[in-house]
Length: 357
Image: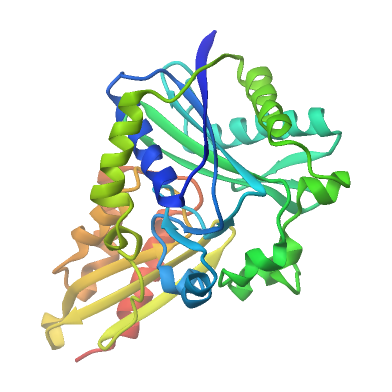
């Protein structure tokens, strides 16, 4: 039976929490720490996914004027609002010790495990809903996401305990397509909380135990209490200072629109992907100068997006689709929520929107 250490890093500033994520991954890959389950909490914070554009997803001025932190995750997915009325949970584990074929299989297994623990503990009907949510009565109670980095799987999620949905959505730009997909008038209708389901907010410790119950029962793991090590804390502080905590990282993708930039978007069951393309040259020499891909999709490894963008630089416009196909045939990334043909279509559409010089 696999043994997991469980730790709780408590309430910390959002960028510091994400820096600890990166430290966990690096140290787990190096074999310095065991398979780990971590619990964490945030002050009021807007977190965007690794591939999202900050100003498109978050009402930046509103957040700044209301003291709400602005943070970029290292996992994919959509923008979320976090405060003290929610908890985060995450796993860093060896795929060899808990083998499954794909990221989609891990997503289902982990989400179904957590849903089981919440249902058994609080007498609710929590269920996994693809692509990566846990819902009760069609409303989202938990969002999740993760990726592979070598043998290490990093997977994280949230549980909404007691949060004002209107305050949450006041921070975020929720696309109309997401609401129309579920026949909702307001973004607030998409979510629920344990407080609204139970009539009172349960204690944080009770929610943590519910998550651990589900993971233990359904994944067949043994859990041992632990504490963050000095090595983890020191590495997290360094990562925070050098990358994760900097505005350069958080606003790495911010406002991709501009003069000479053509764009296209595709929204489907797996989420949204957008392509922003700048072309150069004229006539038959027209080629791609640069491509930026954004969205709430999940891919593993996350650097796949940067690699694809790099592979398209300098490609003649007539060869873009074939170049995308060759990239995916050679790299074979694991795509949880989107398909290679979706990337091809949105990139070709953006190129077409650029016209002929």
